[in-house]
Image (cartoon, rainbow, N blue to C red; front, top):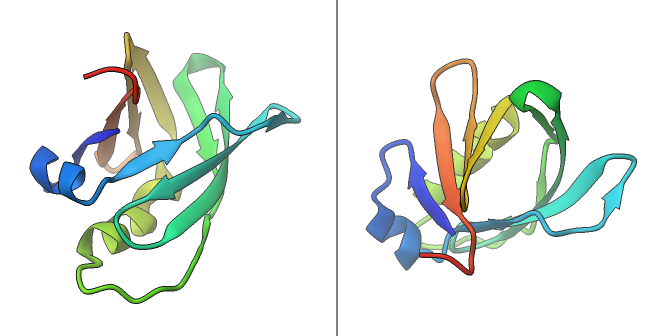
Length: 110
């Protein structure tokens, strides 16, 4: 579950059912992931490396037009710029060199 993202309240993230899923099959050290921000389904690959580094591919997405796409548009603009990760208990935080960050909690927690 998505719980923190630049300027979007937790209530808005919950209302949009915003989430990422990184439980996809691992191939060549990469994870097949998906994301949902309330409108379109997106897919991507992620490679977590030693030292808290992450490389996220440019995602692909379905192309539905929805009434409120602000969250989705903002997410798509910076998700693949995330270069660092930290895991603390059930929380995953992704961040980039520009100070953007996003925080998630495991679906079976909170």
